[in-house]
Amino acid sequence: MKKIGDVMKKIFFISILITSLLAQNPKIYAALGDTIYNNINKIAKLQEIPSFSQYTTKIKQYILDVKKTKQLGNSIMYEDTNNEKAEYLKQLRKLSIINDFFIRNVTITFELAIKSEDSKLFYKLINSGLLDTDYYKKEIIDYYLAHNDEIKSSGIIQNFLEEDAKLIKERDKRIKRTLHKKEIQEAKIKRIREKDLKEHEAIKKLLEEDVARKKADIIKEQKRELGN
Image 1: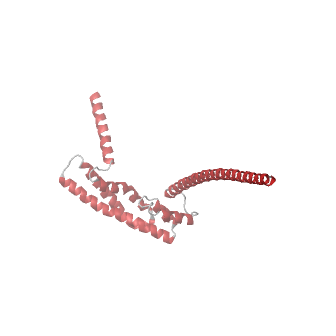
Image 2: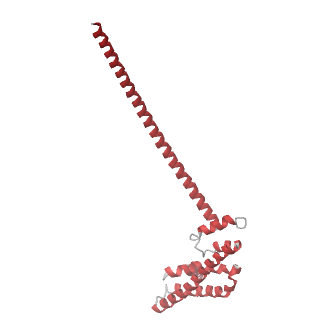
Image 3: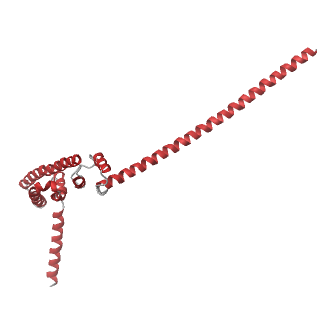
């Protein structure tokens, strides 16, 4: 019984290991494959958007094809043959074209949503994970500010607002630091000028006293000469 139990434990751990490996993206051609596998769930969720209902069948078939291709890619880790590698790369290239098709479609639909002021569609697309939100950040923020009564400030919008808040805060800090440095510099210049002015006044006073003393000496000398 103990031996059977040990065997069952080994089978259990092996099955967990295999499941874990299959869940990972294949290492071979990862530069191409990772994008496809990482986007699959995002593309699957497009079925929830009415504007993409016409692609429901295409999306479902695409999901199946991606899963089959991923299994093939993982199997190559154990059976490394040139034929399988070539077939796997061929499938990845086909899937890449479809992946790019959906990304382009999301971008086009996003731009149409802005023009038609479809806030509900706009919100779903910016949070789909398939739109280059960094590229369209200005358009997203501008649209949100113009339609904030229709759109929740969550998801990507919340991220942008927090980022901008941090940037504004940091900018204000920099301005305060700059102003503080400027005030210190101006105070320093003021002290130097006041010191220079005091020195100038002191020198002027000494000169005036020297001139007055010389005049007094001259008058005194003149009186002495006249007295003689």
